[in-house]
Amino acid sequence: MNKNFNTKQLVLLGLLTALVVVLTNFNVPVGALKISMTVIPVAIAAIALGPVGGAVIGAVWGVCSFLQCFGLLGGSDMGIFTAQISPVLSFIQRFVPRVLEGFFAGWIFRFVSKITHSKISCFITGFATAFLNTVLFMSALVLLFGNNQEFVDTYMGNKTGIAFIIGSIGVNAVVEMIAATLVAGSVGFALIQAKLISVPEKKKKSAIA
Image (cartoon, rainbow, N blue to C red; front, side):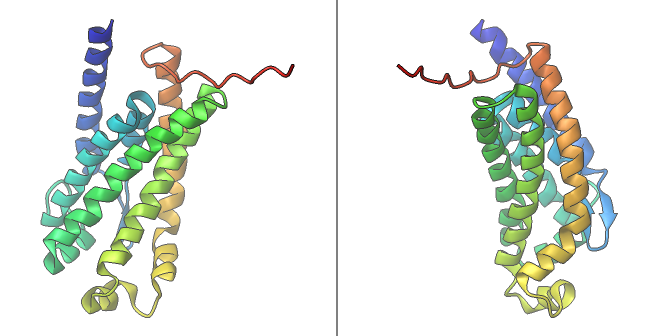
């Protein structure tokens, strides 16, 4: 049983890894940033494989995102710009947030599944993954490059860090959250219904004497 379960996990991990690589090439450009659908397989991994699985797929996305800083996998204008300032900071900014979002999303699914219906848990996790991606990615961008005058002049202008984040991610955040909520939620629930993944048992209410 354990071997069969581990095999299913590895197969799903492989499929989601391939999906991340494919989706990294199909970002939708919106101004200086791009709308990414790659958050969807991270959310599915968090639902199906838990915090560790979510972190692993998040890490794959982080590596792919960093490669875009060098014109690979579709490239990223902002990534190329930040990599010219500091490749090390660019790697941290693009890798760490994606690992953390997958890890935290996995715990969110486990927690919510114990207090509500599994279908609701899947949709909440899809939304939470996209929300975390937005907050962590942009916060890391401002934190690591907000003091660089070249970055400020090129992208931030006279805006403060918070104003830049809000102004830059409005459309991105909305589209990513809607897509992740609907797609990841539906796929996650379908996997549960097909009994391909297990759901944490709900907390039982203690009887009052």
